[in-house]
Image (cartoon, one colour):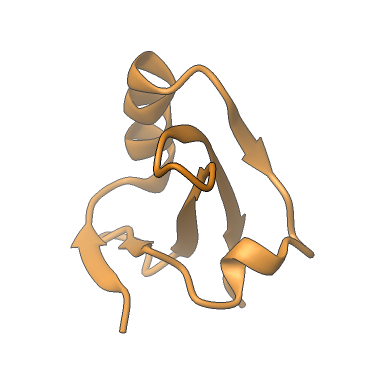
Length: 69
């Protein structure tokens, strides 16, 4: 079960870009079948699923995301 974060998804993704250089919107990504996070905007209810992409050795190389609904 993914972690739910109640925050503005746009702001959350901007902050992720600061720490991880590669942040992509990929609606059909296999990484989003079981996302690491679901970010929910408390004002609008908009949900965004977010997953880390990592290499076989565990190094995180980027983030993929897409809106739910």
